[in-house]
Length: 146
Image 1 (cartoon, one colour):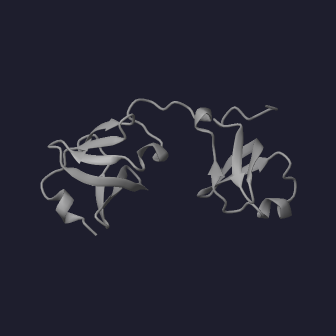
Image 2 (cartoon, rainbow, N blue to C red):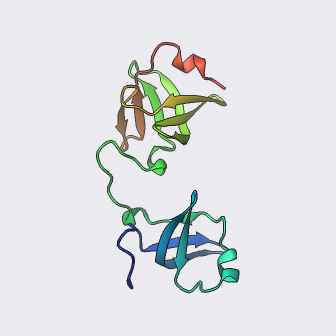
């Protein structure tokens, strides 16, 4: 690793083109609602344009361990959501993030249910079992079925 900036937690990324390619990160900075990465070996705008909009893959082992009760999206997607009474609600399909309000998008029989991802409702997250235990207020699960 050559002079990787200390303010980022990853030093390499993978991009999928015809095949997965590894790139070393030379710099990283926010720009509006996006981020700009300077990748080693990509030295012109025409080269960089080939990668615009591509998904960036990171090795899980390179990610920082998060503080207790904080999770990466990929850890929650696919988790089974159960009520504390044992009823199966569905599986986490996505997350919606708004300022001070994150929502789990849970798929149940082809429909989507939005569940606030708060400690008062999502009372236990078990990543090993891939389960989220919820205690929804009355009517929540019926209210927002889409």
